[in-house]
Image (cartoon, rainbow, N blue to C red):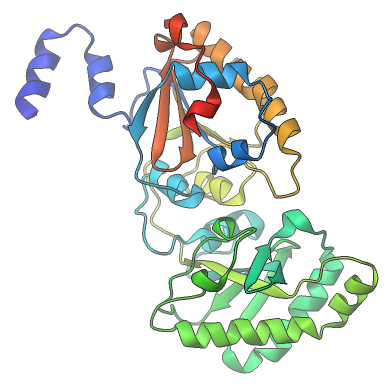
Amino acid sequence: MLYFRKHIQLFCPHRKFISELMNPFSPHLSSKTNLHLVIPNLFNYLAETDEQLQLPFLNKLFAQSTQQTWQQTEFYSTLFALFGLTVEKNLPAAAISRLIDANDAENQIWLRADPVHLHADRDRVLLFDHSMFDLTQAETDRLINELNTFFVSDALLFTAPTPYRWYLQLPRLPDLTLPPLTELVGRDIHKHMPDGRDKMTWRQRLNEVQMLLHQSPVNLEREQRGELSINSVWFWGLGTLPPVPSPRWVEVWSEDTTAQGLAKLTHIPYAAPSKHLLNSLKSGDYLLTLTTGMKTDWTRWWTDLENVWFKSLHQALQTRQLDTVWIYPGEQRVFRVTRNSIKHWWKWRTSWRDFV
């Protein structure tokens, strides 16, 4: 392989293309303009839409792309890998997002303890996140005070700089495996409880949290108003701030606080997604994430993505504003579409349904 690489680089006039081909995820492709688009659970979302939904530009992007293997299957492991950070059993998303919410994450062990609603359904207990309920800061502060009063003897400190992102500051790092909250929304929690050597302690704490919240006056008031109770939290994102990775991105566009926190850790500009940002692209790599919640009107969401993003990205490839677009849908796949591959007009008739 080394012999092959060496001689191609010596005799092929398109050395930069060959270099990209050999290492498509290199962080140093500064001579080209590339956009990496992460839409977690993309195909699951598509499966929720009307079968008659027409997405012609998404069809073209998929049909005129090449598929490559991508080892990560979920959103946060994909983010960490794209930032060049080690993907371990626990990704320290709590410390990363804390950079955005409070900017006091250094030298501390953090755990997200996000408010959720658990719904018993026969032999299952389904988890729903804040996309299914509203919660005020005043209600949050009352619940946090109740938790801190109960756990004061355990030296645990709950804080909530925002109503939907709660944190737990720990005196030591426990041995735990905790799946990200995004992987549990709408699913049964039984197979995803805290694991590891300290699992029994944390499962007990989770039970204590649930009993405390069940009796909280805040939830009694919410139920009287016909609102979902905040009857549990979900522990995830355990760890400390990782080492600062080498800068890769020109800019990061995301509404996710972990993605923003990774950008801040790396001293990279970040902003909420906006199609107007495509008008001022420079050479280098850009990261865009698009996420949604369970209350989403799927057909409308996909129609907006088609009109706002897929059409714009395809046009940017046609006009050479972009050289390459990478699409990360999860499922250990990544789609790579280039300004040259979109010239393969005979491929566009493939439907997005063929990729689900």
